[in-house]
Length: 414
Ligand code: HEM
Image (cartoon, rainbow, N blue to C red):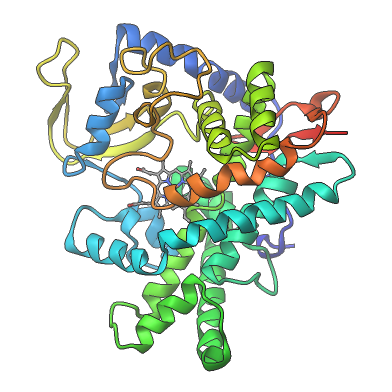
């Protein structure tokens, strides 16, 4: 079987000493960050610089003319050398592309996306016989189905969107050309994904007159039909491809991680279940967002210095980085920085918005953040409102990870 028809969303987790050491290393990250914040807040290790304080992480994200997002090379492999704004600097092209997406992805869509997510999650929970696997059966299924419907992209005849998108996501953010096995998969998936979207575009054009769907694809084609020359077929394909690769793989990472964090804190768990029971969506969102702070998407995000720059200039901790240095903006650490986040070790769902950096900051701040704000908590609400929701017995009731990805967590109810 080739990767194109693989059923496995995640690559098989390696066994043996190395992955165990990686897991131990990952679990030490919060302690290492605490020590770095205290003794070495802008830490240089050769050409690598790790920035751990809240203000300095914001400075790195906010100074995009110096700290460039390093994603273009991998994005080019995924898109077949078509530009996408995540790989761009602050240019007129960046603004045009973002503006085009803002014309077809609208704030007025948010209630429909959230309702769709809750309704599908309700169906999954009601058919589950009191036992739900949170990562795959609930969060991944709902996220991919809801967003695929919203963007207007169907499942390919051979293969699966969630497998393709997750593999390309892994490559985009963590992949190196030295990982030959991943590169082999990417070289099969990327062209197949592009061809699939091209096929969808052609099919949708044929049936356009009789098709009343109001999804992102339909809106793009309407702009194209009306003579807006920015909406070429390549631009539509690339935008939808990059949205599906960059977006839906992430909720199945962070939401189960947040559930695991809630389960470790009986009071917070009780509060989340009570908010779900009362359908207090705002409260449930704040509890989920706070739980995510204890195990966010990643320790940090990379940037490449385009010229020499002094971070935290004028302070005692000021440090210069040189052109070409890799700078890690450790947003996980920033959200635990006691100088900006009051009593950061305490679970407090009433924190101000500015304490959180889950979706980045500055030029490349997550385009899907409003979708996340509308949808993430609605996916878990139907589960949390069940009676006596609890971990399943044994190991499967505790979150298992596979590298950077959440892999399995079973909860039971009733
Ligand atoms: C739990 C869910 C998500 C998390 C935690 C998340 C997080 C992030 C973060 C941290 C960034 C900044 C990357 C950087 O600066 O290096 C980002 C960018 C981005 N995200 Fe998300 N994201 C999520 C979901 C989504 C969804 C659902 C979509 C699309 C529907 C999406 C689309 C994007 C795009 C297009 C960018 C690039 C923005 C730009 O370059 O201007 N994300 N996301």
